[in-house]
Figure: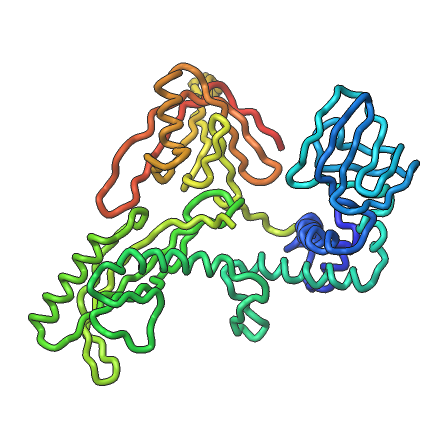
Length: 298
Length: 132
């Protein structure tokens, strides 16, 4: 549950209605931003990097000095049972503290990732709950998380219908760019310059990988992760000096592209050649339609 | 009340604890009821006799891939053809259908220009149980 700001506060900042975005949806976003910000704040929390149990006494070893004192109630999380619980500190030393715990002996062992020991009632969420600067920071990050979710294609549209990149994260666009780069790498052995995006002036012979229309299609069920079918057009380009020679060169280039096509790409039709004028250089070009299926993993 | 729209992107499919979302393009649980019609002196009378549920899944084939779903299904069908597989189909959050199906072998192959696909039609054993 959010501790610093409420869904209602975030709703006011975003200016969105409850019928489009429920409180539960906004709570998830706030939880994400609080999980980012709160661990960075100074709090009565210490990381536990090792633990053991001897003669019904639990030993918790902390990464830094913990400052807990005897008699304080400490909430331990992130350790296996029965260590994850609320303990009363019995003995306190600079880098470890002990608590009564009736269970079988456990030899000293490290824990990765580290557990946490938090003074009961004094976690970051508790002590910064009414801090205006922290509240403002959580709201700022929440807005960014919201933007990255609703503009997952990398673009948002303003009230003037002008598209602008959203402000945080370009992971999807970068990852899709990776799929184009993978194609470009596969064609690197061919006797042609390969571009994973449209160059200002291609030097023939060349291969240019560009988005096709429709660019992306949602064809798989489920939405736990973003899964799309991506359509590309691979443009084969040769110099157009003589009809017969240029056509022969283009056919050779196309056959070479088809032979080098990596696994996981569905090859469609090859469009008819057309003449492209770039400056004073006529070029003969043909598009090869390919598609692949992309699942976002990060 | 706002109009509710749910889509195929809301679906979650699990067969024998394996999640098929990453490869499945469609999943449909449907019933074919058997209803007898009797012509009586008072007109037609109807009697619901039986239900036969089927679970149809279309998916992209993933033979040879690590943790292949097609291979998992093939192995299940080969090793225990008469043992039902527990399935779960979530239509949307808050509407989950649980049922058992008889295993079937996935088809193999496809047309040259297209991605290989597998269409599965499972016979559902009994009646699905719903959780709303």
